[in-house]
Picture 1 (tube, rainbow over the protein chains, first blue to last red):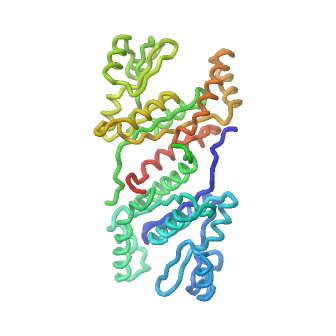
Picture 2 (picture 1 turned 30 degrees about the horizontal axis):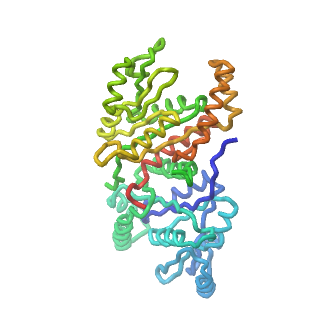
Picture 3 (picture 1 turned 120 degrees about the vertical axis):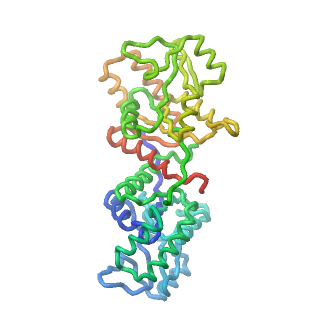
Amino acid sequence: MITLPRHPQVFIVSAPSGAGKTTLCDKLYAEFPSFFYTITSTTRAPREGEVDGKNYYFLTQEQFQRKLAEGEFLEHAIVHGNLYGSPKTPVVKALGEGRDVLMNLDVQGAAAVREYARRAPEGDPMRIEVVDIFVVPPSLEVLRNRLTKRGKDTDETIARRLKQAENEIARWTEYKYMVVNDDLAEAYDNLRAIILAEHHLIRGGK
Amino acid sequence: MITLPRHPQVFIVSAPSGAGKTTLCDKLYAEFPSFFYTITSTTRAPREGEVDGKNYYFLTQEQFQRKLAEGEFLEHAIVHGNLYGSPKTPVVKALGEGRDVLMNLDVQGAAAVREYARRAPEGDPMRIEVVDIFVVPPSLEVLRNRLTKRGKDTDETIARRLKQAENEIARWTEYKYMVVNDDLAEAYDNLRAIILAEHHLIRGGK
């Protein structure tokens, strides 16, 4: 049989808040169930209905700091006084099992993991080319409407999110791919196409 | 509106005889009607039903040689004593109109066009990155069965085609992408995915 030699890959999907990232990632999960979807560790308290090991790994400050000191996080950040981080061990384990990994990260997190992979020494399983995809709304106006309609945020929060989205979108050139989420079905078709295409890319070729 | 700046691209699809290239290209044509599909020039006589400017540009020896001397062919070859070549003018015109170009070429032709683009001087509209995709059968055994079932060729011709396919497949690392055509619908899904993904690749980014 003729087959293309493949190595498991790390895909990063980033998007400003309100760009539709969660819906798109849920659809990816349904289509690519063999992927490993990373779970973030956090020191923030679980909210109603959140399950440890499913929504997040909930850690104490001490647990998080110890893992941080051990070099266990591919990236980490403090948001509203809580620590968040992407654990390395499950990612390395999944890659070792030949599974692709999908990380859902903000622009800062994506930059950190990209840099981690770039600097990983010879022999580190994270020494791989990360495929990062930036999902953006068709315009800031559309994003404003989506955030308003969602009804979850105050006007002040929406204004802050929009400003943040604007700053994030300005960093689009850091990514390998960009998908504009205007129509959800079309955006998803393009997102899955990127994954399928990467599966057919000849590595070590030209 | 947020949009990804795009430049028209040249896609090359290559495949050994019997790998399903024609069917796949027909499906591409149906899905991407705005693409420019190149037509080969040839000195061979038209066969029954073949239309000049649709199946081929039928040229006399003198016409072909003159165009060749003028540098009009991106690649050319002699097959069974007849000249075949891919004219440059229509490709440059299509790119100038912002259209993607799809070229259906054998392994030799793909290598020649790739090299042409690589060596094109500054200012030449062909100075672009060519995206080449290699479609292969799942195995030589499957290819043999397909060629036999097609019933168009003698045993000797089939043996020759198989040997040629084997030699061609050995050159798979020259390509950017490889698609194994086992199941036609799946192969097409992957082929179109490559085109969609390339449309979302951030050029001049990382």
